[in-house]
Image 1 (spheres, rainbow, N blue to C red):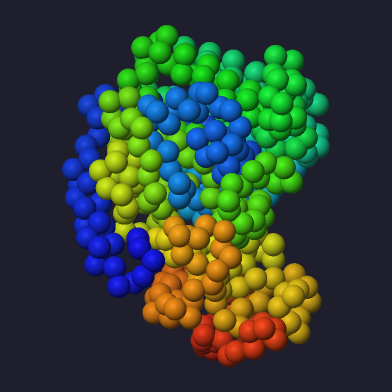
Image 2 (tube, rainbow, N blue to C red):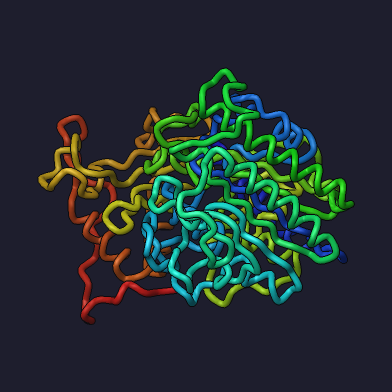
Length: 476
């Protein structure tokens, strides 16, 4: 999309092309294998094609497939973001508002994961790595659709650092230095054992989340410290998977996706983007994304269209001939983007929730426009405690395509875009659980008026609620 609503005609024209592309995209006669690799805390600028560390195997993915410059996570914290990958829905719809800690239930048992969706279509599945969607037995991967699980049920900074196979504990303090190697070896073995059946290999790496570990063959080899060594070993892992697919004659019928759960934490590179993990600035949400499917995804493509991690499930399900979950999805079928049929697809605004305070809405993005509506109190002058979500006295609008650092507010130049995005948020909000609606209503009742803004809010106050005694926080 361009930097002005004057060009909306062009945007909707491209949306029409996208719709045509979706109608024409046919499920392959032979069901594709799916390899989904998701790193933990890998930043937008951490890999070489995005200007970062040397990553020869991801360079290969770029030359043989497609790379996205506007791929956003469902959230900027671990469990919330992984819920988006696995269900195609915002985490707060299923009781996931941040990061699950040990001995905790997980995403609502009524939710269907990607493995649940693909199983009736004949898919074998395995989760290798960090799960982080609940660690009590009924919430572990083997009770959420996966045939097998090998990995750690949460982040490596949480104790005890259990290494598990299915529901059995193999190690009570997993060795971090060997973790990426062992995940990779298990993935290669699964590919070999599953070559005669369509399969889903979900490989959510535990790295480069802190504390980091790396094997001796990569320690000290990157010249960028431990973080650089870890990224280099993850890249090696990608190469091992490619080699296994080729060895087993599966290269031509396997879709491989590589990305991250959200932006980097204390270390790592968000690129030119503002913010990091936890933030609702782009550095927290936007992550690297590569996809490779020889003969299906064109080689050497770069896509600037907007895509979400919540799009993976509906996209994969359709190409695998699987039925979508009954619950409404927040993601959409992004196959026309992956195959290069269209530069953008029509979609509703993506919402940026901050997990602190049980899911606080702060921003919304529609195409290349991003509207900041609220932030936490602090320098914004609201008469509420620091950390309370408050409405900005004047919303801030950024054209992400022209100014990715979110440093130059152009709301005054495009008031019609501000109102349009606000209206989209108003249409979406009633579909969320009641507690999220209540949080947003409370935010809109608290307006920040620092001296350098000092204006009445452009976003109208929330309407008064009538009738009813409130909700239980559950909604589809």
